[in-house]
Amino acid sequence: MGPWNGMGTGMGWAWLWGLLVIVGVIVLAVVLVRLLVGGTGSRTDSGALDRSDHSGVGPGSRRAEEILAERYARGEIDTAEYEERRRRLQGG
Image (cartoon, rainbow, N blue to C red):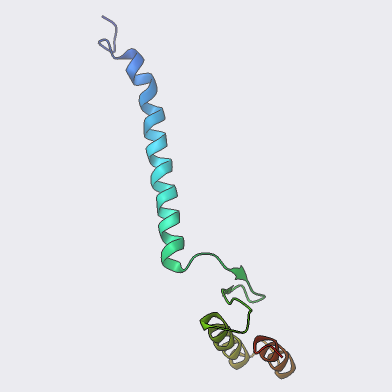
């Protein structure tokens, strides 16, 4: 028998299965993190995720107003921009 004791052909595929398991674990981890963090959202100018629905109705709109108020309080936007965006969120 050779140096692999008859396992030469089986060992050739072992690295592929190992690689597939590693890739699967990474993909699963990414999916779980995205689900736990809250899914997808677009990035705002400040780099924060903006998950509001921009419809002016529902909890997404309320959260968007909270984020807008936080940005105004931190000084990221001025009064005119705050008022304009708040008016848009309220559907006006």
